[in-house]
Amino acid sequence: MKLSSKTEYAILALLELGQRYDKGLVLSREIASSRDIPESFIERILLTLKNGGVVVSVRGANGGHCLARDPGEISVREIIELFEGSLAPIDCVNERISSLSACCSIEASCVLKDLWQKMYDSMLASIENITIKDLITQERSQKEGAMYHI
Image (cartoon, rainbow, N blue to C red):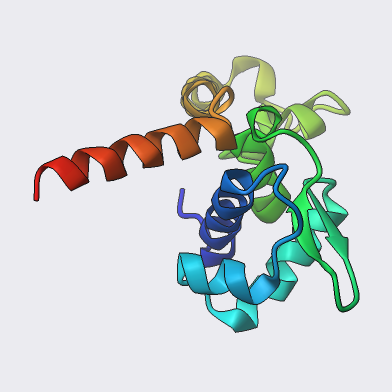
């Protein structure tokens, strides 16, 4: 699976907002500048995050953006699915679709479904419980480690 640049930029923007959590509003251009996100992307990304309930945006001279929730409550899976849709490799393992109706006439005897389900479950297990806070902590650790190795 290949993720779009929007998804990557969204996670980077959330890392920036997460580092500044509870410190007030942050301007779009500050987020873009500090995370090397093209300014042409940042507004659309922040709008999607706002519409998804992840970011709060305030207009005006004293406006800006902040996280709508604690960074420890925002999962990487949530952000990926907000920008990419379902992560299921095929419809028959997509819990949103397969619970509504049978996907195909051979679903009951299909050996491939088990393969796709295992792949999907493994991927979800690896990102389900990783939060923006976890990534911030990892980023800080890497920066501290890099500082000592100069």
